[in-house]
Every structure is written in structure tokens, then in C-alpha cells.
Image 1 (cartoon, rainbow, N blue to C red):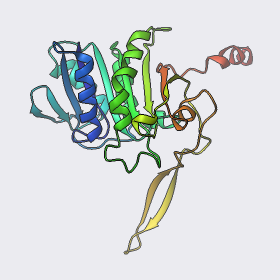
Image 2 (image 1 turned 90 degrees about the horizontal axis):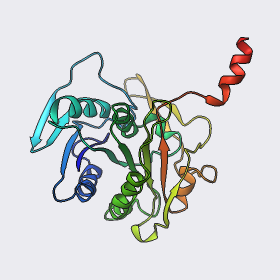
Image 3 (image 1 turned 180 degrees about the vertical axis):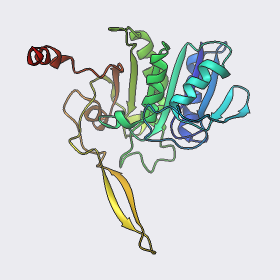
Amino acid sequence: MRILITNDDGITAPGLAVLNEVALEIAGPQGEVWTVAPHSEQSGVGHCISYTKPVLVHEHGLNNYSIEGTPADCILAGLYDLMPKTPDLILSGINKGNNSAENTLYSGTIGAAIEGALAGIPAIALSQFYGPENTNLKDTFESSRANGAAAINACLKNGFKRAQDYALFYNINFPPVPAAKVLGMKSVSQGYRGDGAFNAQARKSPNGRKFLFMQGQSQQVPTQAGTDAAANLAGFISITPMRADLTAHDQLANLAKVLG
């Protein structure tokens, strides 16, 4: 299997090294793993592409590149320039921090998976949840390192069926516990922690200039039963099948009535 890996934490991020290990296991002895990752951290950029400016490419060794751009740029670079053959699978992560619930909408990790899916390539995003039980571990990616291949294989077994043209991709989140405490995997929907996922906090510099710091709410808040963050905080790996279609299908018929 030929696999393209990327992330949004940057080319030197430890989670990318863990993902490379997992990808090598999935690819097999005859497979290939290509890395095309952002040259610097791109957390929170979502599905942004550098549409108005070119991006610089850095080569770090065999099949190993960084791009001065976003995670979605990395997918485009890999597919249309750097890789001589189309990958069989795109893996994005392993993100340092969860991409459960509303975090999904901001995530560059997810953005790369979306770009892969839009290009017709099977794509999976992977993220490591953090909490009191794993933040101070020697290996904070312990649960994702131990269970990454099994979670990816579960997605591969389920497949990437299209619906109304949009390809399927997967969002995997590993729970904030040591590997020995992971209870299994659950198929769940995207959760919701509540209105106001982020806010802006004002601070003044010594010279009186005002700066705004964007801050998120507590990540230890469980979502409704049967959704991602609730499963993660209960010790389970969450796997959420997703598509890039943002249509509120439940509202189409009612809107048609309103429009007459």
C-alpha cells in the first residue's frame, strides 16, 4: 500500500513520527510511506488552501517533504507534484489534542482529510485527546501508538462509500488515558460541547497596545451519549464517518414550502 501522511502540527511534531510508525505497519514491507507536512504549525486553519500565494517546498530526505502552507496544501502538493503515483490512503495526524465535537470544524488535521476525500482518495484523520491521566506520561501518544493500526484497519474494512457524490472520510480520536486503559472502539457521531467553542481575551502590552488571544473552552466536558467526546472521556476510541456535504438535509423540504 502507498500511503501519504501529513498533519497540522508541523513536520517536526512528535505525533507525525508516531503516525509514520503506524503507517509503515499498515503499508506493509512492500509498501511506501510519503510525508508531506506543513513546515511550521498550522493548527486551527481548517480546510484553508493558499489560493492567493505560492508555497515553498522543502525536501528532508527520501519521500519526506515539508510545505510552507496549510495541511490541505500538503495534500495538493503530494497528489499533484511530489508523488509519482497516486496514494492508496491518506492519513492526517496524529494531532496533539482532540478533534472531537466542534473542534472538528477548526482542525487543519481534518482539513487535510477533507482535501483527500475531495480528490477521491480514502482519507482518515487521527487525533490524541489529552487529560489528567495522560498529559504527564512519558509517551503522551501511548494510546494512539498502541491502537492506531487497529483503528485504521477498522475504517479500511468499513470502506469509503460515496453518497450524493461526496466521498466518505473518517475522524478518529484516541482517549485521554494510558494504552492499558483503552476500553475499545466505538462508532459515534460528532458531538457538541455547547455554544461558544472559542472566545477572544483582550490583553495589553507594556506600551499599551491591545492584543487578543483566542481561547477555547474546557476539553473535559462530555458531549451527549453516542457522540465522540463522550466516548473519548469514557476511555473509548471514537470513530466518526464523515462527508464534506454541509447541507442541512432536514431543512430542505421545509425551506421549499417557505419558498412556495
